[in-house]
Length: 462
Image 1 (cartoon, rainbow, N blue to C red):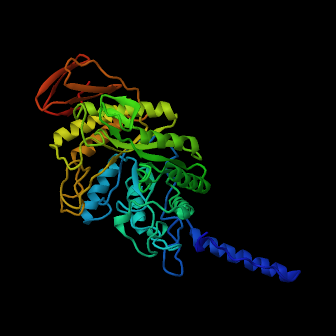
Image 2 (cartoon, rainbow, N blue to C red; image 1 turned 90 degrees about the vertical axis):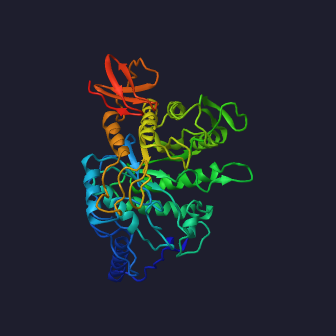
Image 3 (tube, rainbow, N blue to C red; image 1 turned 135 degrees about the horizontal axis):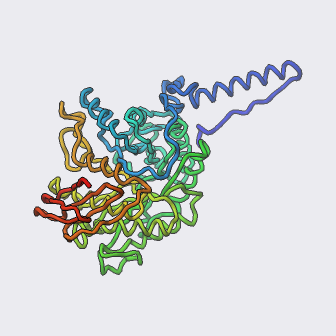
């Protein structure tokens, strides 16, 4: 038990009115302690005598959206986002995001958020507050990823932050401390009802056994799950945020029986998922992430057809676990590979169609925002750039249109298409068609003639 968990003991001496006075004094001291820990009202955090913000309720959270494990399509904030930059650019980004609010995910440490507890009992929620404020004012549904851990929880020096060790996990003797921090976060933002525990098993790889350390991850998960539920039983908690790593077709080492033309799911991932499912304290949804590439970065059989992995795994995961399915991240090309924007959008749209048809309930696009200027796959131009900052980019248009057209529970169907190079998905009167080639083409889709430019993502009028 760390020092910040310790509590003094009071002896009550004397009788009669003296006992009443002592009881009253103790009660007032206890009330003062609670007010210091959790804030006096729902508007702004209290201040500790040290000047460090106490983990009380931040700002005015309002009522918030009701808890749901089926949030649909949203995005994750990364290092640079719309809460920093020029006033004009931030204002443009705010209007852009508020025009069609989406679920927005933020980690408690890293990816734009500072160390929330630099030393035991001393908090700095300024970075996380800024992101939550952005989500609130743009009407997004807030989601928090409970990762990563302060240095003192993972063998580092108290009061310092070594960002090169962001992927280190807490040591087992600090699992309870991390769970306590998770509870403080849940207290601070009562309008957040969806919590993801950790990120990609970071720091939970067993080198000697060459497998995931799923036993320790599950120990951490269970403590965090119970801590967040203790704050509000209506909070929803999920994990294990495993990377759905796969090996190429024909590979024998680490290949599992879960397979397709894209390859086979790594057996070590399957083992970790199986252990977590059997030993978890509970879960309101299942969280995974992954790429359509294989472990060695190959797209099998090609960039478009490799996205079938998202469909096959989504369907298998839903059937195997029986839990609502979340993809915390998804990727469609090898790292450090640059594609023309139209090709990237076409493959992204195809991947999203595969995820939706596979039964995905919630999916977060990892927004690769840059500090300034444009960037391939970003949702908007960087707000620290210039007057062009905060303007929409093609991926945001795709994400918003897809979210509106294919929400969770939508009745999806695959229409008849007379062109093998064109894929399509429809729901009601909404049709999405993608040209998977770098050539202009045409297709008849359920009687509608559609002309498509190279790699075009089209929303034909029905």
